[in-house]
Amino acid sequence: MGIHYGTHLAPDQANIDCRGIAARDTLLGLRAVRGEMLLLHCPSVTLTRPIRLLHPRFPVYVVPREGGQFMVGATMLESDDPGPITLRSASELMSAVFALHPGFAEAAIVEMGSGLRPAFADNVPRLTHAGGRWHLNGLYRHGFLTAPALAKQLAGEIALAPQGAAFAH
Image (tube, rainbow, N blue to C red; front, side, top):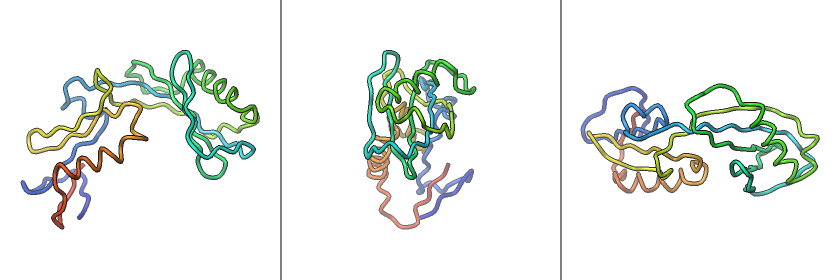
């Protein structure tokens, strides 16, 4: 089994398109939803599982990582703007994580970032097959949780059992 980027495949090989928002030229109805996040370093706070908070504007999650780091996300803005995180979003994310645990007041901001999430109108991921290509897209803000199950479903759908099956990006 191999992974080949930008190559043409024989008809019996699996061609899988999971390009995210870059596939909107191919997948009708795929739209961008902007998400912004913080990466914090705060060894004084100990969380062992992801936490989801309800926020007036968007649900906030805090994901513990190794070395006392925490990813805090994420906004949901109907926008194609890939620019940097806004002051409003950064302030709201910081306020939410501080409300969760006051120890975050002394957290170091390691990174602030933004990106565009692929989503369909119903915010439900889609696995489709068209033109000899499998499309897995529209994971919206649920990729962290749903990607493993969707990959397993895709593997089952295309019966990847034969050795030598190749994947293309």
